[in-house]
Length: 335
Length: 300
Image 1 (tube, rainbow over the protein chains, first blue to last red):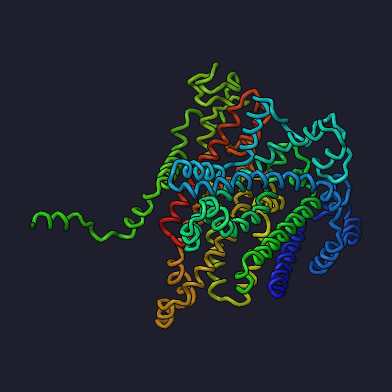
Image 2 (cartoon, chains in turn green, purple):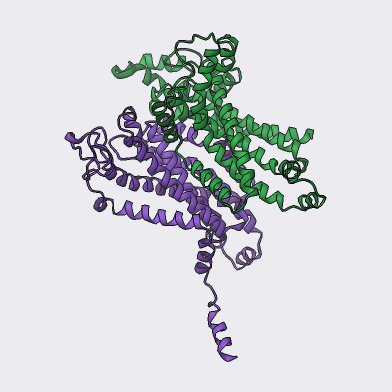
């Protein structure tokens, strides 16, 4: 197990270095150098330009510049935002809990519905229920989520008035930020109205963001269950006279879940990129919204830092999924 | 019973050609048939957009802004799906959007396929350091969520339709490289490759003429599915203002530019989205069907 762990951890080092190269290249590939962008329309006299280039370290050879960049990154220095003049890492960490909160509930929605739906489709194979689940799942998988989010708003917020349109909590609640997770903070404030408001703000964004993962999980659960239900040990369990639910839930499901867990883990990347769209539509103050603002206002340190941080998180989550997979499926460790 | 024997013989179909065999297996899947029908319909619509669309896509009928669809109150049969905030005919813009979306899908997938297959062939054929470098690079690209990578590329190249297509081509690239490499490695050890080598075939001939044709099935499937993700990502970029720019009738940017009218005139938002959904769904259905028919191994 230990060598397996070491090998997997060692494998992410080149990937991480690659991502830093990409993030580093991002700024260098943008037409015009930062000093030129700084000078604006009027231009700058060549002497001052050279001095500034020297000041920023931009006159050094590229490998040296990259080395310095990597050094800064490893110390947690990702530069400062051009618009707010705050350190990029601080901004990211302030906003990240909002994204985690959204992604977490999106995942609960996806697993909570996708898993039972997939099991149902497998058990009732080739019936109306199966076709319905697979049809809905394929539609969900093909859904442009920015449009889906708008339809949800149009129906539940505008027509029925059940849920708020945007934000994390109604404006009249002034909740002090302690954890950054609105639900926890609202709960701590002791105001049940605030908690209720926070929950109602979470519902539509979670559904919008969770729809594609739901579709993927339902499909995967179905095919994995179908495979397992054909196994000899399931037949043996039935032959022993075990009740149907016990065969399904204990014997089949446990084994069918192995690939499903991997798929769930792999949805994290999807959730983070989906968050970009979902947060934009619901004005959700998370890192996706922040990143898009960064791109639109040409705030390159934010774009560079944001991409590096999100990619790092995806790499780490994939690593954890791999390791967990090794735990639940011992065969993989020796592959 | 000579008669029965004769009819039994004539009932046996002639040896099925590969295409026929493929079609028989493909046609068993009802979803796949729906998918391919829709795709053909969309292609016809895209090709004939100039003739089918009742109005020019950018013609503004200023006195008819935000006209509802014809079956709603206040709608007119002149504008079947209504008009947008500046009085352009929705239906005509959607039809022209079909052309745009299919072109985006086609160009992105084509660029990605050509580069990806070449890189995959090189990686799988030469192995060693070349392979390591290429595959590590692909791992890095896969570590980034696709939309994020596309946004990063657009941040470098600047917003616009062409740049969005390049961005999507880059995003799709790792899938083709991985598929081709895996297929090449599986094929390279087979005897027909060895005999071709002994017969004196050069490296390029071995790579492109001998090995590649035997790796096409998974590539066709992936390319079809690539179409749907290209269309979806292009619409998302358009929606974020990073892809096609107004007044281009691209579905994603149409949706974004009409956002403020969503309450007063929901049709300006619902129809472009529906168009995206139907198109993506059609390619996904077709891709799933192709996968089941061409490559039973990949069947999930």
